[in-house]
Amino acid sequence: MEALYKKIGERIRFYRRKKGLSQLDLANAIDSTQSYIYLVEKGKIRLTLENLLKISEALGVPASDLAPEFINENISISKIPKDYTLEDILDWFKSLPKRKRKEILSKFIQLV
Image (cartoon, rainbow, N blue to C red):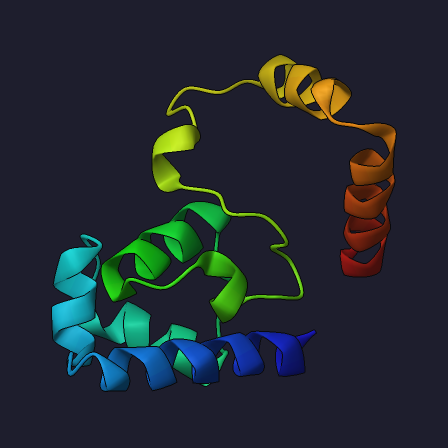
């Protein structure tokens, strides 16, 4: 699993540099710290979905470019409710097509 987070971190570093941002610039853009960005880029910590989306928006690239192993759709941080509950998540999950639910469950099982 650590190798996967390292790959994601490498992609984040690539796009950050491509955009000409320092780690501190990116940290400020997502209301975080330079040391957090450093650890993310080194693959030393697990990124939350919320932070992945914040980083993708700050870098101007789809989250699927940063973490194609996890993200297969265009999603936005603005689509994630700030006070979601387990019931909200289950309702959302149930609303997905059967094919998409199977895909998500398969990826979830790989993570566990």
